[in-house]
Amino acid sequence: MSAITVRNVWKEYGDLVVLERLNLEIAPRSFVALVGPSGCGKTTFLRMLLSEDIPSRGEILIDGEPLAREPTAERGVVFQRYSVFPHLTVLGNVLLGLEFERGGILARLFGAAKAKAVAEARALLDEVGLIEHERKYPAQLSGGMQQRLALAQALIRRPKVLLLDEPFGALDPGIRGEIHALMRRLWNECEITVVMVTHDLPEAFGMATRVIALERPREDPVDGSRYGATIKADIEVWPRRIAGEASPHKMPPISSPAPAGTTRPSMRGSAGTTWRSKRYSRSTKP
Ligand SMILES: Nc1ncnc2c1ncn2[C@@H]1O[C@H](COP(=O)(O)OP(=O)(O)OP(=O)(O)O)[C@@H](O)[C@H]1O
Image (cartoon, rainbow, N blue to C red; front, side, top):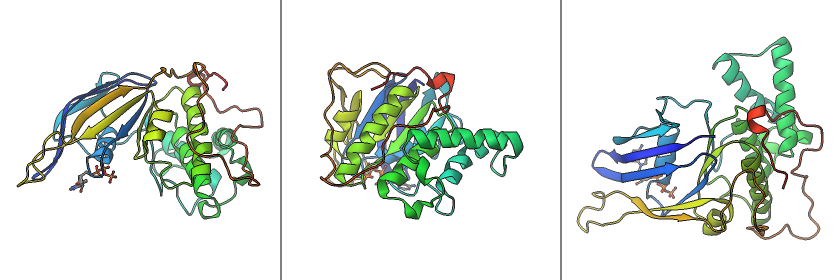
């Protein structure tokens, strides 16, 4: 759970101004959806939040502290595709996150540490409905299952901030409905602040606490790269959604339900789950 402060951030690549004058306060446990036309800098903004890129001007703080220069465990990320490693099994993909966290990039876990990590990873796989597929490789999973795996891989390191770059954009509508429900549940149960880029307005308004639209406020007819995008609209979704509290209204599914006759694995963990830490335990069952 974390507050994000963005102060007068600009991003330029050579002569191209992508973003300008971004000022933003994101409260802990918010779920912010970032929308805007293609090329307006949504992914660039996310990459700066991840420290994969740095602002040309201005600063970004998490809990009042400047961002670390490198991506760190406190910030998890899921992309539209290719977030998981194809040569590792489902369990291996989730375990990798823990190995990175506990032993550094070349580390392997052994003995009791390994057994503990496996138990933790399996509990999380149970949470996201993939425990029966733990030995499979990503290529053997559907798109929705791969994105559930990507979420598990991001969450195993217990990030404070979860960054999502069109994570559900490539999924069929029925599958999207399911993963939206999972994502809502994870946001409610884990103490995370979420920033999600999406092109899909119903998804933005159906999931987020706040929708922020980026757009270029001015266009130079001669030089299209002269002005960057900035915050054009900042909308608090109403009725208010508060993480960890029962929603005042039952949200309808954002996408259409699964076609009749199809079955999907349950999203709820079936076994007694040990994955949630104390920090993650303030949960409200939906
Ligand atoms: N490393 C880079 N070097 C130069 N230009 C870049 C770089 N990264 C992004 N850009 C440019 O920055 C602009 C914004 O790109 P970005 O991917 O952030 O947009 P976006 O809003 O996420 O687009 P989309 O919705 O299509 O994914 C684009 O014009 C892109 O070409």
